Amino acid sequence: MSLTTADLIEMQQLYARYNTAIDTGDGKTFAECFVENAHFDSGISKIDGREGIGAFAEQTHAAMPGMRHNATNILFDGDGDNATGSAFLIGYLTEGGYKPIVTGRYLDELVKTDDGWLFTKRVFKADS
Image 1: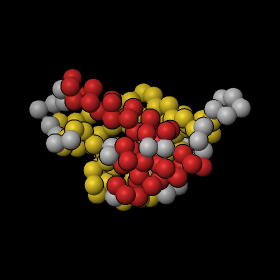
Image 2: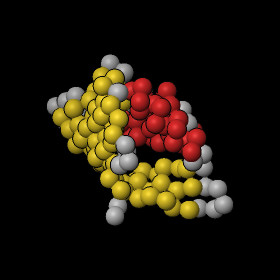
Image 3: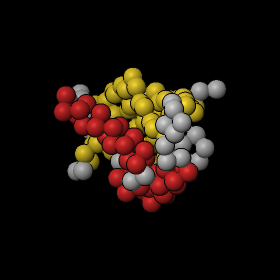
């Protein structure tokens, strides 16, 4: 069975919740975007498990409280309860005006759980 419209909307909301959580320092919500034993590669650090993933969001926000994540060109492909996703990212700082600091692409693996669609693996690759 291919992905439904409801699946696509729920996954889109997952991407938005992820970005909002890291930009507000909400490590709990950020971690809840992932399955318990997920793998997250930020391009700087590789983290396994929700606890470490949540701490990453809190630390990132504390270090750069004015950072914002803008994900674009989000695509999904999948069948049934498994999917892949991708999105381009523009990361920028808001303090003192708009200052882009990173661009790149997320490559994702997702699974449909009792709690909805979640990341099992998320890898960010910065542009060179």
